[in-house]
Image (tube, rainbow, N blue to C red; front, top):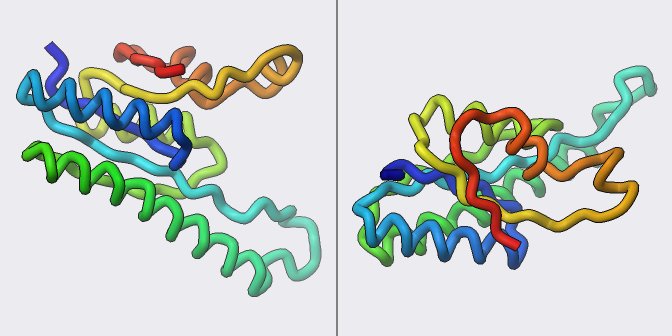
Length: 145
């Protein structure tokens, strides 16, 4: 049975749906929740002059603050349900790699995550983080739509 559940969140309504389901599942099975939000670094070009400006520092701090707020939502829900939990905020241009890495390091049995349902050419060329996780992890992933 799944006892250690990773719940990555981007703060979206679909992520909230995954959080709610993960909390209920953990409550019913005596599991533990691992919350994760990945902050996106400033998208600068290292070739541009003055790439690291005050704007980039402000942007990155805002992204970290948002990520902390996202995992706080998980912590509050897990605490209210009386569950064991841990939360992590990481920073990466590649959220799916962070999700897989945290799942491995924390010994997660399953990942509960949202799908944003990209369609058409965008799905083929960009691919969602959920699809990338599905394609690169060996642990089960429960996707919420």
